[in-house]
Image 1 (tube, rainbow, N blue to C red):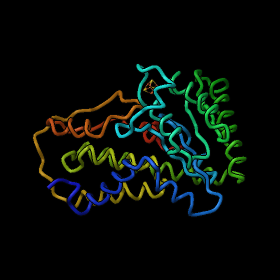
Image 2: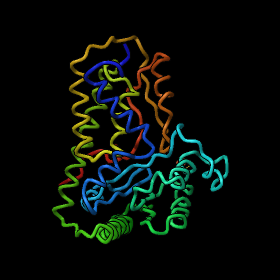
Image 3: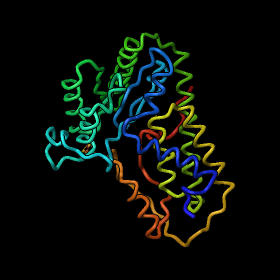
Amino acid sequence: MNNFQNGGSAAIVDRCRRLFDDLEFSEVREWKAAEKGRKVIGYMPVYVPREIIHAAGMLPVGILGGGDQLEVIQGDAYYQSYICRIPRSTIELGLTGKLDVLDGMLFPSICDVIRNLSGMWQLMFEDKYVRYFDVPQNYARDIGGSYYVNELKQLLSDLEKLSGKQISPDDLWKSIEVYNENRRAIQDLYHYRAKRPWKTPSPDVYLVIRAGMVLPVEEHTQLIRDYISAVEKEEQVMRDNCRVVVSGVFCEQPPLNLIRSIEMAGCYIVDDDFMLVTRWLLEDVPT
Ligand code: SF4
């Protein structure tokens, strides 16, 4: 029987699969509608300081394009055909109204394509908050360091205006701790899979981590903990598979069936760099 049909971890993975398939972002819409004044901020991979969005009482939502489920028609008019799919399918999501739940969008400094996308977004969605979130190229504390502090302060002040809520240092400390806890849970799952990959199929692990792109962080941390304790109780056959590390995906996500195919071909993925935002910081942020 395949893992999606079992009880336990299968029910968790099933829920994550529904979130993955839902290009209408229904759960995000429900979260927003549950309380008047709630706001949602989208962000492109690879890394944005989600703690600041959380501290402002908003929901950060990772936008990873439309994957292989979306036909790109309008998006093709904005980029050359040889450009990767994620910006074109993100435009498609935007122009077809699937991202209208977002009150703003952050475009981190990944590459020229994403920088240009931030400019297009400003022209296409004039009523939304859009920010190109740059990172320093210089690592000296008094140059790059102070530049980055200013970027963070600017983002914080923008989000205060948008949310109508002043962000206190205490709000920030709490949000940092909540994300530290989430990163710890993700690390625990990665360590668990590295030791017992036959118990944690990589397509399932991918979906569990990916759920963190749309769920509130506290709920996602609990979901990961529940998944680990469910798989611990389940028996799975250990195969003589080759252990492999999949690297280099960066921001464009692989199709789920590709991850499945790698494992069906006789491999266990024991580490990967999918969804870098969740593992970009390697250690806890001190609180
Ligand atoms: S895959 Fe990501 S980093 Fe690479 S060109 Fe496309 S948007 Fe930029």
